[in-house]
Image 1 (cartoon, rainbow, N blue to C red):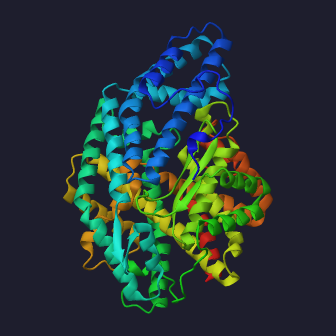
Image 2: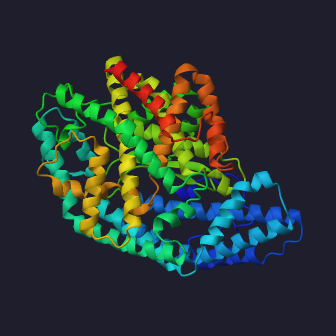
Image 3: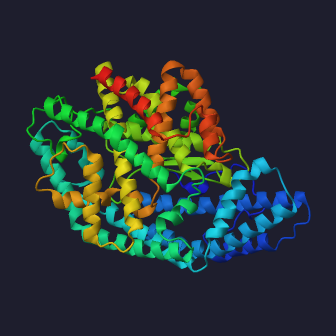
Length: 573
């Protein structure tokens, strides 16, 4: 990975001085006060003020992103951890109240110097929502939650498992769940679960602190609970909590029966009396695990070739990332869990973080994060930094569609037979994802609708949702304690609460794009890129429409898409 601070800027600065340190609170506050006090007397002045504010926002965002990336790449480095913590504790709290004042001034100036209503429609309603939600006394509370989130990262990043003669990361342990030897799988699963359980009380404590502070934030902002607060904070203008619960019911009625069928088929193929938690990832016909690559370079080569066969323009963007050193893919000790794409807003380039260990899912993960990266590239020319971010419900369409469309080219890693195996895993993973999203989202609704719940209440509720959406085939006898804390591994619950239903909504959008791609690849790709190029400049339903799909997660939408998945799945068995 290169020094991210050395990346060239997409365009020269006009407002922010070239050499300033944007991790210095005094510098940041000075620039914000300069914007707040600037005289604006004409429409042209107002437009310049907006662009200068956007330039500042991009510069500050990139400074914070670099600190976050460096911290997650080495959670055990006290210097990097300290730098990120200092930014969270000092700069973020100083920015929030001044940003609120800027938002109020934007609304006031827009009333005085009206600009293109269609161009600024999204910005206006989002800014108004933020102004309505802001409360000064929430600033230190939000800082406290951010520091607890970093603590969660550090706890999880430090989890190592002694197994088969050496210390291994949690992502590395997932490889053993693909082994055909059932005893090895069980030992690996139990060793990983035991390691997580050692920190269960610590993680429970972190979450309880978060939950209490979040409820206080919500009440301060005039909301009855944190769920209602987050719907406003996430600018969910186009759907409600009732729509989410309708999604849960649709998944229970349409998807869970298919998940049960998949699990029962697995149990039969494996000739097992009981399907146990360590039996869900291995090939059910006892074939050796798929090994698509060895080392990050081979992963990048293969995925690059897949994208090249898909689209020349996207291939160029992928190669640009690789050439710029914006990929950190291999798992190692001290690295934070999971994977993400983070946009460096001033350079207008994406960075991809992963924990690859050489399994099939790594290929999908890089394709997924590459979809996010293409989104960042394709909307990068918009001068407004806020419009270079789409709503998450559409961001995940970008990533999930890339997984599905590129599936045609898994031959870059596999024989035709192994490619079919990989496709089966992808489609079964989609079924699992849709039901898991319902589980996690329903659980979060329950937690924040019941803000005074106890840890014991939480365990009971989590168990009920797992039964409701899990399919009921896997036997957890004797593992009730481990199952009760499975939600700890879902970092979204700790770090980005209520950011999870987006995956379910987006998966339905991605399946629509995939359905078109199977019939008309060029049309599907052109519409995909058209939608991505809009960034966040239009309301969510219009972004879906631009990509040739419907913003709809009703039963009537879900049922035919799942039929398509079933048809493809059965054809690959």
